[in-house]
Structures are given as C-alpha cells and as structure tokens.
Length: 317
Ligand code: FAD
Ligand code: NDP
View 1 (cartoon, rainbow, N blue to C red):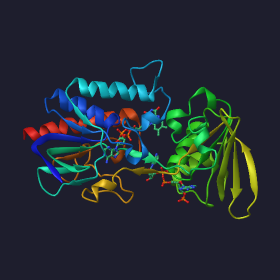
View 2: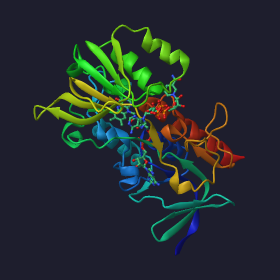
View 3: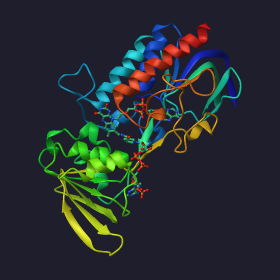
View 4: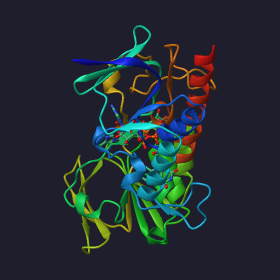
C-alpha cells in the first residue's frame, strides 16, 4: 500500500451539493482541500443524486430551473476554480482512530488533519420490469423534487411505501394529481400517527393494503399504468398512473466507515446538535449522509458550508 508523505488539512469524501459547497468554502479559506468525488460510488455518478434527474426547480438562483447534471458541473467548476484538487476515485476505507486520519482509495493511503464526510444516500428502488425504461419518465424517488412537474398535473398518481416519507409524499402529491393511491405491502402503515392522520383525512388519497407493484407499463415514452397484486388474495389489477413514486427508504452511503462513527440504527451518521460535528473530533458529516428528514440539495449545500467552517475553526484551534 502506497502512502502519501504530506498530510492534507482537509479531505472531503463525496461530490454532491454538500461536498462541493464544503470544497468552495474550504478552498476559499486556503485549506487546499482534496476531494474524492467517487467513481459510481453507491451506484451514483460523481456529482451525486442530482446527476440522475432532469429539471431542478427549487435550487435558489435559477428562476427558470436548471438540469441536475448542469448544476453539478457548475458546482464542480466552482470548487476547482478556488483550488480544490479532485480525485475521481471511491474511498474504500478510513482509519479515524488517531490523527492524522487515514483515507484509503485503491492502493493509496492519504492522511488528513480533518475529514468531511459528504457521501450522501441512495434511494432504494424495486427494479420492477419496465423500471429502467420509465425511470424519470413518470417514475421518481422524490415527490417533493419532481411532483410539481407539469407531467403529473391532474393525473392519477401512485406512491409505494407506508412510512413517513410515503405519507408526506402522498399528501404533497395530492395537491397536483387528480388522485393519489398508496400501495402498502402490509395492512398497517409504519408512519407516525400524525402522518397517518394526514393521509386518512385527505379525500384524494386512497390506500391499497397488502399490495405490491409487479410491473410498470407505458406508451414507450411515459409511464401510464402500474400492474399490482394483492399479496393475500393473489388478485391482480392494472391501475392507470400518470406518475409512480417510490418512498421505500434510503440507504446512506456509510459502509466504508465500518462503524467508526456513531450512527443511528439505519446507518445515518449522527451529528451533534446544530453542527456537523461527529463523535470523532476533526471529522464532520454533511448532506444526506446525516439527514433523513429534509434530503434536499439546498439543505445539503447548507450543511456543507457548516462542515467547512467547522473544520476551519477546528484547525485554527
Ligand atoms: P449526494 O448528492 O448523494 O452525493 C454524494 C456523492 O458522494 C455521490 O456522487 C456518491 O457517488 C459519492 N460517494 C458515495 N460514497 C463515496 C465514497 N466512498 N467515496 C467517494 N465518493 C463517494 N433535491 C432538491 O433540492 N431539488 C430537486 O429537484 C431534487 N431532485 C432530485 C431528484 C432525484 C431523482 C433524486 C434521487 C434526488 C433529488 N433531490 C433533489 C435530492 C438531492 O439530490 C439530494 O438531497 C442531494 O443531492 C444530497 O446531496 P449530498 O451532497 O448529501 O449527496
Ligand atoms: P421507512 O423505512 O420508515 O419506511 C419505508 C416504507 O417502505 C415502509 O412502509 C416499508 O414497509 C416500505 N417498504 C420498504 N421496502 C419495500 C418494498 N420492497 N416494497 C414495498 N414497500 C417497501 O422510510 P421513510 O423514508 O419513510 O422514513 C425514514 C425515516 O425518516 C423514518 O425514521 C421517518 O420517521 C423519518 N421521516 C420523517 C418525516 C417526518 O416526520 N415528517 C418525513 C420523512 C421521513 P414495511 O413497513 O412493511 O417495512
């Protein structure tokens, strides 16, 4: 294993809005950050989740919206402009037991005084027949991001899942669609009572219990139907659907940390109060890897800024 001689002041792992915002702030503070942007890490291209979407209409500063990949290219360019060095490699492991911390990618180990974890999370998918063809053509894993798009207006919409996200997304989509059907695989919702009430009280939302989606169908361009089956009776139905939204949970990209940071039971990094500090001094976490509530580009960018400012303060102390 090759080892780099010089110790970096800050290494940033991950390249979504959180990582790039941290990079811009750290670079402008003359910390010369080294970023590992990943190579299809967690199944997502460098640039993060926004590289998998089309119009982003809720990132401030773009009144006409901007394509996700274009926004991420611009963020990368801004990081580089201020001196961020970027390696297109995935970090395989870290050693956070002593400072300087060790970060290993491929056959090289790098050392750093501070590390910013910005590796995001990946929305779970079902890999249904037809999903590859209709993904982002009527199918999405983020209703809050995509639900307001014109293609979903006044159409029957379908949400899969029974947790808080599914309830939140169904309530949100009910503002735009003609109706919303939730497909729930058991006969109960996992969501909190408050979220359940929101769904039960909304006349536009209908729940199909004990139901699994088995196939998505369309006209070649856009999805228009979902085939479902009742897992108790075996009865099959084909539902009209102008949109299908997965809300079956996310997987934080934290496997490479091998449990060296405090995480919650679902693998999200725990940060302290109103900060990005982890339980290891000098290691900070920002963006979706530590946030399962908001999961938006602008909130990820906000915490990326916080992580860089906190790393800078840590180094000066
Ligand atoms: P991510 O964007 O997840 O980026 C993390 C990056 O780190 C990835 O590139 C990953 O490959 C890399 N990485 C992971 N592990 C490693 C490793 N070990 N080594 C190196 N690199 C690694 N939000 C909005 O605000 N507006 C929208 O319109 C919107 N639309 C969306 C549409 C879709 C389809 C999806 C899936 C999400 C959407 N979101 C939207 C949510 C938004 O994309 C996320 O909240 C945001 O990207 C999170 O940013 P992040 O920097 O935390 O992580
Ligand atoms: P959860 O893991 O809580 O729920 C996932 C849901 O998807 C469950 O109903 C689960 O069913 C279902 N599901 C999982 N896999 C499949 C599958 N293969 N096929 C069909 N259904 C499936 O994830 P959420 O994203 O909803 O929530 C994550 C966390 O974020 C939770 O702690 C939640 O409380 C929190 N959150 C809070 C919000 C709020 O308070 N406003 C908003 C959003 C999230 P089953 O129940 O059978 O396992």
